[in-house]
Image (cartoon, rainbow, N blue to C red):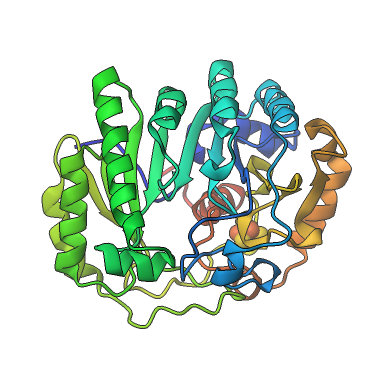
Length: 360
Ligand code: SF4
């Protein structure tokens, strides 16, 4: 069985930074998410970023304010992040990262500095050249595949049916390259459940396993207050347990929480995780977290105006922290199960220990 952990928090593995945080020292983000561009060649019905600027899935395909982050400026910032102790970069966010033509160069640059890197992609632009340039530098690549056949894929991704075969072929080529060169990169599929039958999902996961993929993760759509898409049915997690039959020493199928369950209210009263994370978007702004991209109160500033250390100054962080700490009920303002939810649970427990902690 592989040792992948797709849910929960991994912050407990960063004891040095946790101790610094508890002492009240400056902590720099361990993980930085980067949106190389805000445009996408697909327009997924459920896309978590459709809410930005009130745009619809169609508008996401045709934006007048499209932006590509400047490669030179980003590489300078990446150098700085490396110096201050950032450990990982995750290319994802607002648009399809591989539409940025210089992303392979950026990834090679960061890889040579020794940063861990991951990519979330629809896989349509993962050509042979790109595979060759980026795969040796990646810890993992996650393909977003949310359809089980050409018609289903085209409907859910708002794209042409031919894209399904293109993406499957690209995933196959990536898996072959990984195998040929013995690369440690993990290749996975994330599939947001869009009403397909459990058998259809099983077939997709099985197909991916046969291609040489490392994991298949089935996820329930997470609602965002400003995203009008709603899942029509609430699937039952047990219906998908057949997926677990695919698990072996090199493949892991995963039915992600909170599938089938209503996410309970947050057990923490305030968001403590922000010092450990930052998100840089295509126009250069640096935000505290993904669900609040575009909101000035969550912005530390712009990489075109300041270097990262200045953006992360005590004053800038206090401005954002004061706003976030002033939120009365996070469940009303923040989407359920946000990226830092599990980190927050851990930090809240650490900062507010229960009784009898010596009884481990
Ligand atoms: S709880 Fe989640 S969504 Fe809300 S501010 Fe914190 S990280 Fe952002």
